[in-house]
Image (cartoon, rainbow, N blue to C red):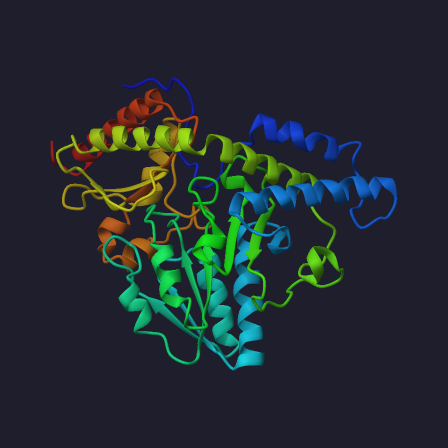
Length: 394
């Protein structure tokens, strides 16, 4: 019987703890620097300056113009604004009513696209490859004169699959098509140069990179048509009404600053952690199957399933077993955790329903230790041992 020695957090793709430097940066804007950025007096101008300094930091990180950064309440709002705001203008002014995305996208994209279908748009949902990425050929053969918008994940939130955004953008640049990139899982972990790659729209969130919850960004390339979704003020250059979340924006900018400073070091650490874990999993004699692709996959995410030929248990029971032993993992997107629903991402990759129903996601961060991986493996072996007895294989 293993002894619970600690709580082990392996769900960094769902959210990350607030960095102490980020909190320190935010505190003055939760206390004495409380002014409304729209006010013309000193209190307001102090916070206005903080917002614009933060905007400049984010813009520099992406190699964007300061005017191209819109602060939002998070990745989900950024995706909604990118898709709905752009699609409506494309339909009204250019009569472009076709959108292309994939079946493996985050629910924020899929549900927004379903909403747009109700507004008269045609949405094509591409099937990803067995590794979860989108092939350029499949995308191009679905483009016609009505196509105005393409929206794809950079890094898949469940499997870690990396889509070759650079190649896709290169293919679309002369086709008068706008591309939106959901970079929620790659922002702050991978280098993204929006000027070099010529991405039109990019969404990201602070709480995935040790920043506060409730704040994110939408990058909008100059000249990209987009309309507002939130009205009632002239904030964010008339693109998003409402008083700015000053302390959240300041925290986001600090998180970006730290990520930029430590990106290479953190990436190499997580890469080592990921490989260490996979090596241990591969020693289990095919009791565990790895769903994340071997190549073109983010080291921050590792998706596995128990072998359906050897075990029978659903993902929720698996997660509970890890939880009672002090290990925090996920069934995939945090937005659907706790809901008895087989992963749409794994199914879209052609993984059979039984295997997909026994999938769990481990995700790693800069503080993940090899000792924590060792303990998670002990817990996994304990679970497998119990299942063997229950399934009559011992």
